[in-house]
Image: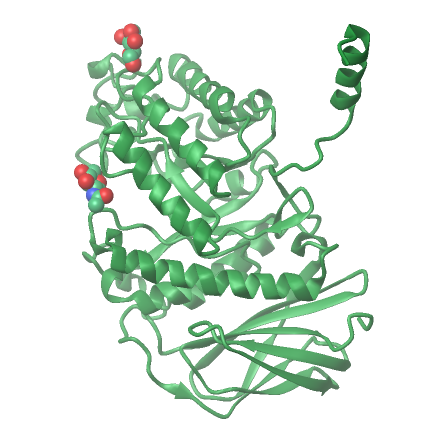
Length: 489
Ligand SMILES: *[C@@H]1O[C@H](CO)[C@@H](O)[C@H](O)[C@H]1NC(C)=O
Ligand SMILES: *[C@@H]1O[C@H](CO)[C@@H](O)[C@H](O)[C@H]1NC(C)=O
């Protein structure tokens, strides 16, 4: 086997063959769900935006412990920030933290450790290059820190110290530096299938409210450049503080999926504190607007109230679950409430239980679809879930058919469960629903208790939609409708 020609031939053959298994994430043909190669990839996780320390070993251990727990409990996803790019940024992972030209090697080394840890635990990470903070004036809000930006002339950057932040999007030196940053990351971590995708900014709209010259051109130029320097075509996205996002960026072909940040600020109106409903409705709306996969990239209760979520875990439960049933690609990704009680072990256990049960549900769904199909192969449409019996219950659903596989999922939620309510204890008994678009035929209806994982199965013959009684539940219940025989469909 030591013959150079033979080795060269083997080399040529292996270069021609596609890799046996590619775990890089792509988008299914339905333009709703993600997959790795041919398996469904349903993101199950949360934001773990930055570590609590810049001690490299401790920072990597922090992620390692989170990722190991995720893996052991069915989780597979985290959103991790590489910014804001401020001098001595509070985020130890911020790459541009000394000057605007050279990524910091200490920060990059911590990220190396995080990527390696994610790889070893089958966790995919969405890496966010920067955050709005450096590009709005410090007098505007406590979160605006242009004074500390590495691009500020006071810190050696190219942008005038007074109003220069508006020129970030068009300044040639700043653009070149940002491209170098993208290239640095693509070269350093782009070979890893632990990278789910890239996000240019956290909540970019807060930096300038879309007004500065060059804002949109900057986005096109950066996304296209990143695509060019990333050999593995990881997905690219952008995020916004405003819940509706931005139609010129979200709608652009340069961006692969959309992300919604939804905080239930009570000041925004009486319907708002219902995180379940708003996460689900925004998923449906973004899907309808852009026909590309959508995630709830951040959510929580009123972020202007300290520790609002720590008291309202039941609402986080609803936010984790709801969006999938309106075409969201995975769990809602809760904020991680750095500095609050959400970091302690009690809360982590709570999250892990959510992920375990959600994974059970997704696996059960996958089993009903069959091994040879991914969710992304199935063209889903919205399913009207009419609650015939049961007061103050909301219903959400999607249904799809492809190549002999028919499937529907639905979710019922106690509409009285909001950020402002106590943990629901109301037993919803004698419920009955009508799933309007389910074709006539014999169906298996699987009710999944999202608190215990208990299953109740019934067979129903449908005519003019499927009508079925619902087992007693508290807060919410998930439902799968599949053919009694998989050959029917
Ligand atoms: C939260 O982040 C701050 C920096 O903003 C850091 O000093 C603190 O240690 C972090 N706390 C936790 C519990 O992660
Ligand atoms: C920028 O910071 C890096 C360290 O991160 C340093 O090596 C480099 O010399 C600095 N460049 C300038 C122009 O100060």
